[in-house]
Length: 401
Image (tube, rainbow, N blue to C red):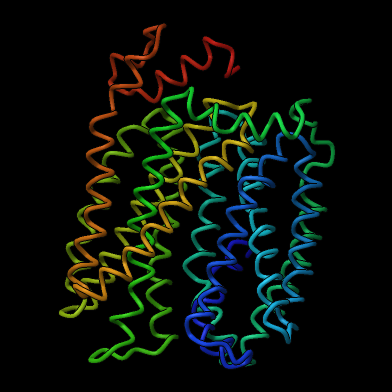
């Protein structure tokens, strides 16, 4: 429910532009500002989970998010609307606070499965937001979408206050400034974090390429589908949520590296049926399902491995890792619309396949590099899984207990 607030506006832009007498170019600020707020939240709010009680942080964020949504739903001035949307983006990162909290609460043997379960909720929120927003807006207008979400977030804040552990210890005594400065140094020091960050950038560039550009051919002649019909393709993509828990369990069993490779092969292959959009919507649906399965499998595996490598810094790891996600999503969105304008849907399919193939090649080239950096030469080397070697190295150096 929290992450959906970032995507509700996509099918509502026409209605919002009419309500505020804003031109098509300016109304694009709705999405831009919301995502900008989300990026700020990743950098400056999520790392607070390593400093503050995560339960209190999550409850406070959710409650404030509900208030910000009320402001969006009742705004009658474009400046107020844009300002409130930035705040919505900043506070919607509560979902990432909860991902880190989940990794902390779970036992090591169940961490991947638990993170996968929460990530399934994230996938559902992202892919169903457009459809839900379209249905609610058809019934009560665009404002009702945000006001309905505000009520839901008030309810969620109460549930979190009731259900989350009450005596969560403060994970570290470091200062806020020290925590922020440690984020880039963590990624510069640890090759596992860098590799997984680059993979996140590439898979989400591919993901964003599809979901940004898909509305353009589906809404145009000869298909001319309605917003509600287009939203149904997002529901088809919910099959990707089913992969999240399974990928987490495989990571728990030490199979994260090869899960990543298989998923990247499927991701690259998914663009072949997607390319046949104008010939067969069934082929498109098959491709969408494969793409979402693959992206979420890599995403959950990434998170499981980086959380295991640095358990003392999970919140700041989420913030740093998701910056790669944001960059990839932005690159995919900008590139997809530009390529579509000049080369149509075949160009978009080629772009998405290129991002996916780049991820596959990068994984292949780095699949053994982490093992070479393990001074302990521990058990997993013989089994060909450098991710486990990195985790073993974390145990040897005291990062993992």
